Length: 310
Image: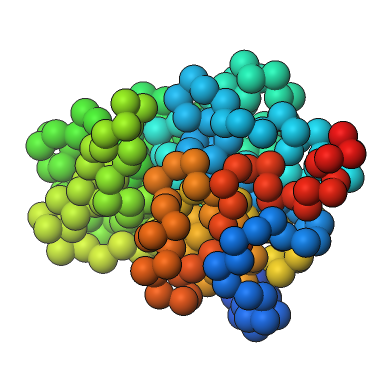
């Protein structure tokens, strides 16, 4: 008779296979949507997945047109969810930031690697001892979710890596010892982003540098990347969003993460030219990575005739 633990794993595996088949089907349905349309979509989508930083706001500044976008989608009763590949900011912190801008958003509408990693561990490693590498906010969020955390390499079943500006040799050594130790801990990462755009317009190394250091020391392969552009991220979003992928629009300023992920998943995309992505980069990208729509302002993802009536 199967143990309860094995039953949970089998159920999660069956659900993941079902998600993969659904994603493959929706990719086919999205192929007939034109690419690089330099105009607003001429239809209203069933739901909208909005990137946060660089799309809705930049630092402490709200992007132009966000208030009109929210008003239009609320009038049309179209659900919105919000995503970020930033693994060092929790959904609660983003909720507070949105509230600061006057936007009342339920925390269940916000998806970040911090949230996705906890759901992934619950589904796939329900009884695991987890060694977590990340900043204080990341660790606090994991602990608050009831996760069994450990700093003992002999006990760790999984090593989870998030962005950590205080990463050092001591943390590298703990991760190394957990992975090469008797339990052969699995390496799960929240992001493989090469670099982050900072608030001052500069950049800094992303989580990939930390992951590569651990891989170089231990020889480990990444068991699962839960960040963009991998499809696992959208798997979790669509478990909570009542919409089919090909009837949903992903709106982002990032070509190499969010746009690529959505296109691979079969979700129509709109590149907003308010952040890191540019029209020149989009034109040079491979067709599989190009957005369906390119707009100047986030409000342009809704047909103009609707916004003009507000």
